[in-house]
Length: 181
Image (tube, rainbow, N blue to C red):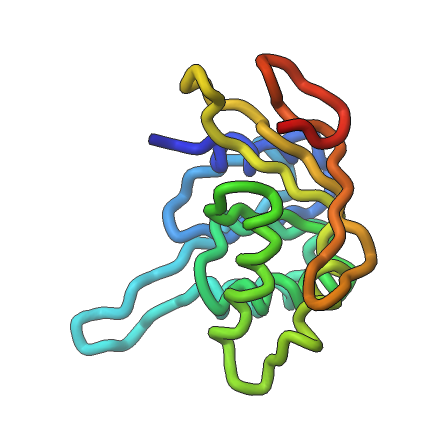
């Protein structure tokens, strides 16, 4: 089952800026005139030659992107993505989560895998300053894939809880403004 993440990643197709994509497996195939597609590489049998998402994010920043699109965030590379987004480079990435709120929580947890010097006190404002919106794609009650929720990430947090403003929620067979259960 697919959650529509690759389709969402192709959405910037109307952009005319320099876009750099980073993926483990090429799936996005954006139709953008100035696009550099980068792909990870596993280490060889002797352990050499690995090219990680973390390394590709750092290399991409040297290439002066107008936008950065990362296929999927799973681990410590989330930290590098947040740093890139906080450096003024707009972008997007996908992450597996059960809701928009859970995606934010995951982005507050995954960067802790990057090293001991990263604390929640530093991480929470880094997350809410890096993100503008979270779009949750999933299956509705009929099994159809759709955007289930769009939330705006607000520039404030209390006790490490980042405030979100629901924009649209799929509920009872239709899109509704705000949050509805």
